[in-house]
Structure formats: C-alpha cells, structure tokens
Image (cartoon, rainbow, N blue to C red):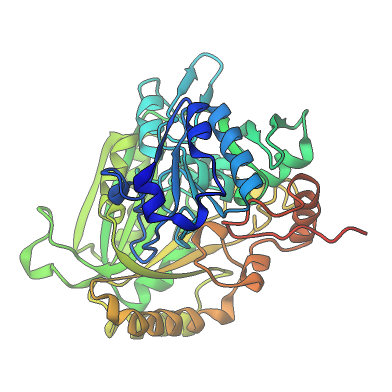
Length: 468
C-alpha cells in the first residue's frame, strides 16, 4: 500500500483499500506496481490516462463490490472489457477502472442454440468457440473487440444482413445496477432495462453475463475484392450490396492497398475500394452474389474463397493494433454524386498516408426489427460511414482532426444519425442523434430509475431525466 500512498496521497482517506482487496476474489493494480504501466493502457492511444485504482474482477460479486466502492467514494468509475472505446471511456485519470478482462466464462448449448457469455470475452474468442459447433452470434468486424461494449451499443458486423445486430440475438443479461443489485433483465424480467441495454450502452449498469442466440454458420465464402477507386465503382456499391441476397454482408474500405503477400508491389499504396464480405451460404452462390461487383470493374486483386467463419477476422487484424487515430462517423441515407466527389477528392490528398473511409451497406435482418423494439432505433439506416485517420506524431493531431472533420462535414447532406459505438467525445447533441424518435427520452427516464446519480457516466452518456 505504500507505493499507492506515495503515488496518490490525496485519496488515502477516500478508499480503505486493504479491506476492499480482502473481500475481492480478483485483484487490484495500483500506481507504482510492476503491472500498472501495462494495465492502464487502452487500445486508443490518444487516451493516455492514469487511474488511481484498477480492479481486475473475477466475478459478479467483485463487480458489485467495486460499484459500491465507487458510489461511496465519489470517484469516477470506468468499465473496461477489452478497452476499445474510441472515446476513451474505458479509462480515466485519478478514478477507478473496473477491468472485466478476466471474466471469460462461456457456456454453449449447441442443441438449444444458446450461449451464456461473460463480458471479458472478445468477439474472436467467442466466435472461435461457437464455430466448433457450426454456430455463430453476430458480432463486429474485429476479433479483439470485447463483446460487452460492442453488444450494449448495438453490434454491427459481418452477419448484420443475415442475422441482424448483436442485440437482436440477445436473450437476457445479468447486470449489476447502481445500487449494487445483481438482476436479470429480459423480456419477462425488468423489460424496461432489457430494452435500454439493447443499444443504450453502459448507462444502466455493468453486465456480468449475456445470454445469446446462436445461428447456423459453417463454412462461408469470404475475402475481399480490391476494386479501382473510381466514381463508377463507388456509385455501384450501395445498389449492388443492398440488393444482394441477405446472405451477403459487406464492409468496404476506401484505402491505400497495404503491403501484403497477395498485393503486387506495383499496387501497394494505390487507393482502392477494398470490398470485404461474408456470404453465409453455398460458396458457389456466393460467387454469383459478388459477381456484379466484378462486372462494374475488374478487381485489382481478387481474394474470394471458402473459409471457416472465424477466418474472416484475419482481414481486419491490422485494425486491432494500439495506436493514435481520430474518427468521425455517421449513418447516411445513401451516396450521391456530390458525396462521391467529396470522398474521392479527400482521399486524393489525405492528411495521413493510411487514412481510410469505411462504408457498410446495411438493411436485411437489421431493418426488419421495429424501430421502437430496442434502444437502437436507427433500423432504416442504409449506409454507415466511418472515417479512420491513424497517425504517428502526437503533435500532428490537429491536422488530422481537421482533415477528418472536413470529410465528415462533406457527407452531412445525407446524414441519417450516428452509431453510438463509433462516437468519440462529441457532445450531447451527437449522443441524442444516436437515439431518435423518442428513444433518448425513454432512455433518460429509465436512467432516472436505475441510476439517478449518474454513477455510470463514463460512456456516451444519457443523463437521468428530471423528476416530475
């Protein structure tokens, strides 16, 4: 404890750490200890924070104890699964970080197609385990992202058109609320809370176990078509992807072709529309489904092959690396010629040589769920655009933010809201934009009932509605 006291003498009297640690099944990490330098890091390197205490929870009881500690001390509480929050909410300066990374329990009932999963699991860990049974739950596009934050924000990924959002597979959660209770929320128990956690983020408690449906997903056709970055190719993306059978979900990146074994040296650095995809059906039918893209323009590189479903994560593995980057995103109702011209002009002179624009064409199963069925209310969104601008020199952040913001504003004419999981710290108006058609007001009322003091505020925060 002396190392902690010398590092943070201002809160010696705030926390009785010896008594707290004695009651834990997990462990704590303090400033000055050998583990602290690594334990405090998160994926988004812009958020270089120094929490006063990191709690590595082993179970729901540890979560409840940590909630009580934060409530009693008044210290900021951040919750971390895998630490991929773009806004940096999974860490803080001078507060408590509750690290759920050790809670990796997973029980799969293949016969009933149900899974019980703890929040420390990553999408890749869960997906590989489910694939052993020929099953999957729809998660995001990157293996190292934690299932907790991904799920609570909605979950848009490789199976979105076939099986919907991650929250559409969610059957129940066990969740620690602000008063320290462990409750089960489902359609039958605490249905208001269950509605809220399906898209409302970590505003309402800390989920210690998820129950998911599993779907049949065996061998897929997956890979990528590297298409020329021309107006005609961009113009064709939405019509072809949106009209394809729902077995096809795509995630396209307008980006320079990276050095890779499959990339001819003369193409490295060429800006391309890299159309990655998953087809959850017969591979021959999948080849027919992506053929219209090949007919618009001959691919510069064509990688389309049968593979186990988890293998698709190899195509986004580069995005897992910790580093500096700025992000802006929005849903769009489509891509018109003005947007396409702005995109191509921006990508012709990026602030960073590895800047990219991600475009996801949505619809399908995601769109068939009524808008008011879950807190995620933007079911009719046609396209999601995410600008990712990585960089190396911290002093150049302002330059990259300016370029990113200019491209983001160039797409504003087709704006259709925003996905909360892809927000940085952008203000209340942007949070409200993630919850249209009365969803924000409904969430604020539920927040008032479950977390009236806004203990859970390190998130895309929904403030409790005023009483009366």
